[in-house]
Image 1 (cartoon, rainbow, N blue to C red):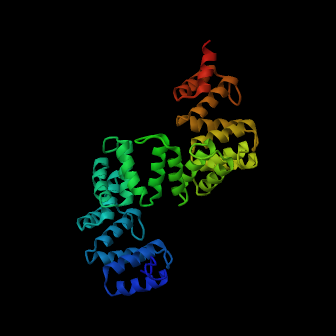
Image 2 (image 1 turned 45 degrees about the vertical axis):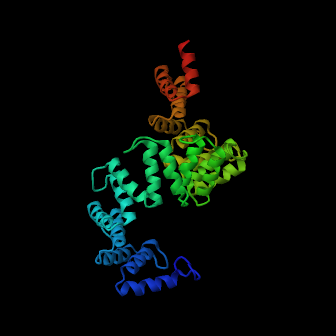
Image 3 (image 1 turned 120 degrees about the vertical axis):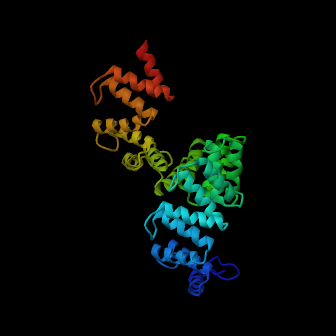
Amino acid sequence: MYEQGYGVKQDTTRAAELYRQAAEGGDARGQVFLGDFYRDGVVFKVDYKQAASWFRRATDQNDARGQDRLGQMYSNGWGVKQDYAEALKWYRLAAEGGDVSAFFDLGLTYENGEGVSASSAQAASWYHRAADRGNARAQYALGNLYFYGDGVREDNAEALKWYRLAADQGYARAQNSLGYLYEAGYGVKADPEQAAALYRLAADQGYATAQNNLGDLYTSGSGVNRDAAQAASWYRKSAGAGNAGGQDRLGNAYERGAGVSKDLKLAASWYRKAADQQNLSGLNHLGQLYQSGRGVGRDLKTALALYQKAAAKGYAPAQTNLGLMYKTGVGVAKNLKLATEWFTKAAANGDATARAELRKIRK
């Protein structure tokens, strides 16, 4: 009651005192809840060893929640040596005791192949068991499997169903994914306004991907009034949270002066942050600044290296830029054969500029 503020004024310090009294008196629930406080840094400083110790005391009483929590500690190497086999053992014991979180954790274990052979079908089976009992994370994970056809048949309508169930519980990742289905029209009639509303729900919870997606809608004017300043504001929040896409888009806003004062040095700074995370668009954008000498000193060698990184991973604009460098001999020896090869790759990836260049070469 004191932890959540049910019927009394919320007081986590008082909650911790009561949990400790119960835990030291041998109450398994108190031991689990006290362990949670140590694990999450509520009232106490984060102390994984203390958390693991209290979870283990709960397992001595065959408490399923304690077993699941201890499994999580072994899976992540928190307060104990990381050991996937040990984690799996505790998850199984917790699942046998009917712990819904353990069903989800077993699904995650099979999906990631941690201590077991990876099996999306097994993951789906465990996720189903947890999802049917209302676990939002499992509902979201199951929606992902249906969306990608991983371990189950691809079914956008089924993905929509599970995302919606998780989103209705306020799960930000599911709200974002459901928003994407409404934006793209997968499994449901496209509805950009509904997409914007769902992205906003997740963005307001600090989910960086949703902040980025909402920024994109403000940039395009889809589902909301076009507003470059609002777009930049959401990109800034996403970028500040470390989202590479948001960093790249904020850099682009500064490069173009869209919703912010034009500032090429800031553009380069944000592109660099995105590029450091191997964001392909960020690599390409930073390469363009180095090639032109805008916001940074002109450096064709660095531009070439950045284009090559993005092009090697199939990013069409960077492939086109490489082709143009080889075609014109800027920063590299002129080589029409290599230019054609890069234009061909970019064209196959849908780049219109590359197709136009190939038509010129083949005339």
